[in-house]
Length: 456
Image (cartoon, rainbow, N blue to C red):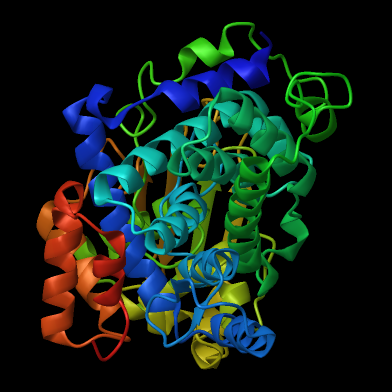
């Protein structure tokens, strides 16, 4: 068999029972974090607009919007919850995939699981499989693919979501291969759309397309079952020149992505490429009681390639601010924190922060050694000069929330509560959190989802 069929066979035969306990714990924690950010994104304009379009379509109400009143089709719910989860750029990151796996894979399997009254175990199993496929493909395509301008969350995410959805639907190896083939033809997403509503749309689009591909394959729709490796196939089109190891399929689950290297959880609702610089600023500001008004110059040194997703130098909107190193650093220096409120249009337009941005220089330094993923490899250095001539320096190798500096259970719970409080009341948040923390024991995902809708 070829690569596509080997991956499909692995997806079809893999069982939650065979997964190490640390993988299952990591999956459960990722579900808690991702559901939290989906809830937080429910009131965002892009989520509301897409919900209005779906409501106008009047689809059969098979699955639910988290944090909102809409019930719609399975594909519609996957789309909407994927958009909601990425609307604030607060969702987890995979250095292997060069993108955001959970915000694509989980909305896909959550919608299917609700509609099919599947168990929490089935949902976790499918989620792990989808993340693993996305990350493994990303190890080959990721860096080059990303440099070409593709948004890996969307392109690779479509394949991961198709694998996960196929697993939840119980497809055999041939069915999963056809689902991957259909998903490859649905993959898309340009990084030029960063800083706009189209970026969160990418995540929802990938979740919807993955579900769609698996459901079509279940009905008997077929595709090229060598679609990943063949000439004119996925790698040839999306990562031309990439070297595809012959034993790539054998790497699946050895170890699982969720165990090593693991996912990075965000402390700040903005592009992950800014996080190490922000932490450097926070460290210096806190240690030296540094007033922003006294700062005359900030120089941020980053590895080559870190600035690729940061396409907004002088942002005009909150969305653009999420992709501006200058704004993230200035806001951290001025406010001493980055919160959801940091990335509103009004916050970005503050003149005092704009003046501070003029004093910030960001440099890609080829002397900084990097690993395969520049967003998390090497280090970031922040140097601040003040009016009295004092110069302060901080170097950050890993942001808090990275696998090497994981957040504790109380921090994850705090993030979930902050996010969920945008749409749910306290008692409902408590019930939802308890169910997610015992997801393996949930007999019917529809029962969990009922606690993630306001007013229940």
